[in-house]
Image (cartoon, rainbow, N blue to C red; front, side, top):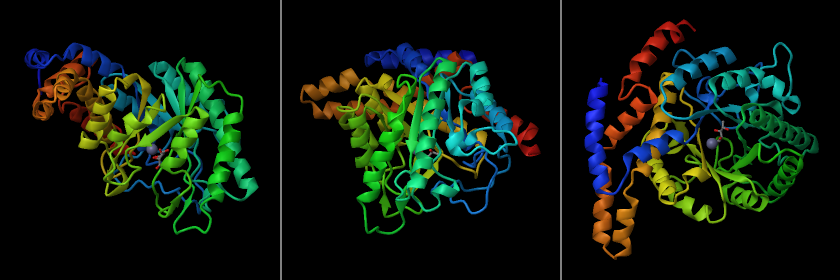
Length: 422
Ligand code: RNT
Ligand code: ZN
């Protein structure tokens, strides 16, 4: 358990090491604390949603595995868990809500009919905490998604239903933004696709464009509701064909002035999302990053400080693009304590942001420019062993949250007092 005195002594030494390489650690801490990270509500309840469960509903390929005790069973329990999570996280956070977390009381309200009032309890909670909210239409886990097609379905009735849902989501997002005084990112992920090779790869894509165009044509303030679209390589049940692939959405977002979402789990395992950033951002002024951890496939494991996450934020920092990316978590693991899962994933994401900002970029780029490839390589290597942990502890201390692994005792206390009683 590092004392405050030990933290500041270690920080002073670290500050000197970084300063020798031209890095201002105070400025990096300040900047890293201010990048909003959007906490996905769906880790708390294993992506179940708050609608009355119905029989025979496919999940759209989203699957949380494990049965660790303590899953949140309603909105109040979710908010209590998120309170606990927020108390352990340094810096600025937001809440990322999915549409099927509407609270409609005893009345069933279908997805095409939801309105901002159905989220008033979430809004009151976020407003009391002084945090912004983001939103996601839920185009899965619904009887009208069971064929595997929603907005790209060849059934007009199905398409129209989901178009209404998409429009409803945009109005809700705009209302969130207005109430909380901060633009709301509204991310559309559409699960449509097929398990096996379809005979027609064209029709669904043409229909998806038309449906999305209808949704985006609805009059909603685009400054308040910032729509994003998320592509994917494959899902459970859509192994062969995903209608909304990366190429589809990269072009769609760019041509329609929408934000493109890149999820770390949505590419071939050897593809580098870090490398994509500088390519995409020549054309896309802003992108949304879903931090996740795919193990062999899009498994949505808890984010850790691995190479994929580190190199992604290093690229963002080197490109000076930190203010042009939206950062959101996207993982779900029901096999471990869910509060700890949030804290680990959110802290790792912010650590990667901090590490990017601590990069001695000017020095490394000067070596590069001077044709001293060996120096570039040596400095890149050196940056891995710089005392960034001491800078991180200082960031936590500055934010008034436990440094090191001290937060584990808070999680243990909450498990004993609250989670074990569920
Ligand atoms: C699915 C996408 C999407 C979802 C959430 C629940 O593969 O990553 O972002 O995880 O909308
Ligand atoms: Zn995602």
